[in-house]
Amino acid sequence: MTLHEEQERVQQAVSHSLSQVREDPWLAQRVLADAKGEEPVKRKISLALVLGIVGILALIGTAYALFSSQVAEFFGRHWNQELGARLQGGKIAQIGESVTVDDVIISLDEIVYRDRGLYGVGTVRPVREEDVLFPMETAEWLITAQEEDFHLEEDHSGPAAEAYDAAMAMVNKAKASGGKMLSVQSMPLKIGVDDGTMLMPGTIGFYDIDNEDGSVTYSFEASDGFVVNEGTTYQVLMESVVQQIQENGYPVEGTQRRYEWTISCTPVFMTSQDSETGHSAFHVTFQNEDSYEVVTPQAYRETGGMPLYQAVETDFTRELHPEWFNETGIKERTGGDEIVFSDHAILAASPEALFYDEYLDDQYTESPSGAIVRLVWIRDWDNHRGEFRLEKTALSGITLEEAKRQAESMITRLGLDSNRYQLEFALDMSLERIQAMGAIYEQAIVDGELLTDDDWTPYNYAAIPSGEEGFYLEYRPEQIDSTNTGGRYGLQFYVNSRGIVFAHLRNQFTMGNLAETPENLITHEEAVERFKKEIRQSRYGKDEHIVSVLRAVLTYEPVRAAAAENGMVFVPAWTIVYQDQQAARHDYECYALFNAVDGTLIDASFQ
Image 1 (cartoon, one colour):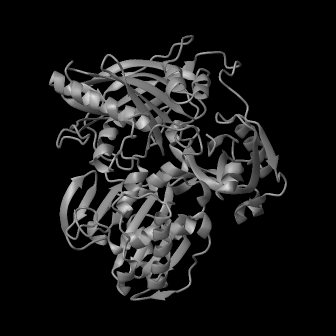
Image 2 (cartoon, rainbow, N blue to C red):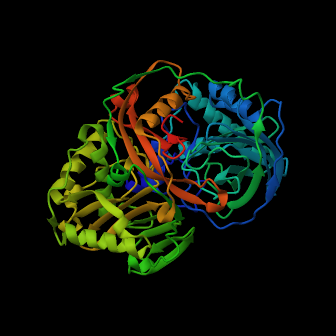
Image 3 (cartoon, rainbow, N blue to C red):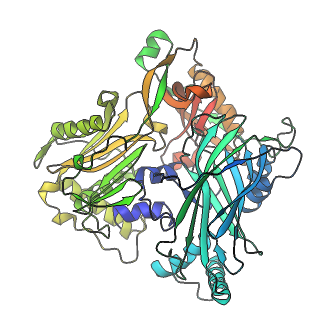
């Protein structure tokens, strides 16, 4: 499996519906990081690139109290029963407005806010009765049958057979009526609170179902604590993607349409705030309560305080010169700020993310640099964590210092201050290391530890020439702890004798001018106590859990300013790093992030 194919698999087969947008692998990693062990979410996708606005429609929602929530009912039935009950205690806004988009009418019916999450339900109806609407998952069964040597159970029973039969029944319905087969997705692109900065959620969970009357009900959850926080009014920029599909599930070329529309609503409580509808305590036993590590910056240790800074939005597209990465010339611009070079390399950028990858042909055949970078992932595997470390500072045609100079020069060119980024990880990829790591990677596929396609063939790492040796480099903002960045920060490069041959960069905000200096910050003890309270009230806990606090790290994180007109600010924040039984068993760490100024929870693995 190639690097490109792995990225597509992580995005769970939705790229066919977003065919104009090349995937962003950091954001794919963010999807994995943000799964957080919760109840199964039907689909998750991260949107890395925002296309131009086709049309914007303002929809004003009015909130009413004391009625049954469509969102709570739908989520309780199709997502998780306890979540549905919990949402009954949220703040609700009935929207009930619709917009006609070519062949369909799309409405957003209701939104519920609860615990730093926005949950929505809407309806899609065909304009013409003869047209057939396909839920995304139903269309994907058709693609699965074509692409992955799909086999139904021998007796043609079970969930797979039922899903496939349902998909074929809809195909036959469209044939009988002579109508179009249509696929529609609607989800939030950006969310604002109290008319503040509109931000893109890190992950979106969504699921849709078909109804007997031919309509489709869609739902979404945006529970990114960095984006969705307590407020009075919420602004949601929705994106709807409409396209015609073929009998095999693939889109009909040239039929995809994207529309953006905005709603503004003021949710109110459905029930008494004291009733805590659907709220059940998480049974937690804490271990090592007094033995965790405390990590703080020197300035805090000296003064006991840390100032707030303005958070300035990054825009990698503002001054982007393609020749900085590739001088072979531009073959085509495919839209969405994506460039294909004459040698098949691809450069794609959005304001907060940029990536450059080399390919051998237009079919995304993996280049040696892509195959090498893919091997770096092994360093994070349970059985190999810490095994691979920097050993050599000179390789064929490139030294570590030369690689660093090229990477840091590119950081500066792209409008970032390289002095504010520190080299967090470096690895020399010599031919010996490439072959050793390649053997581990391929054996994991043979042993079934890694999934791949049925026609997978081993990559010939032994044939990689010495000129492909190089240094893999990772940079992080110096004042941001890397534990909980969730894929929002980090600059990754692979540099060899040909220059920068791989670059995956994401940097949502940079630190600007000093905004204010708070009089006091909560202590790490207070942050840990708040962590205990929040995790006990998590929506995911039924059974007894054992939790060990490992570290309390004082860092900076961007949040919405107290006054919306002040935009975003970097605030001091306590990262409480912990493990529960599952995390300890698989040797990974969880986190909860608290604003050190007011003590509010910003984000957490248990959300």
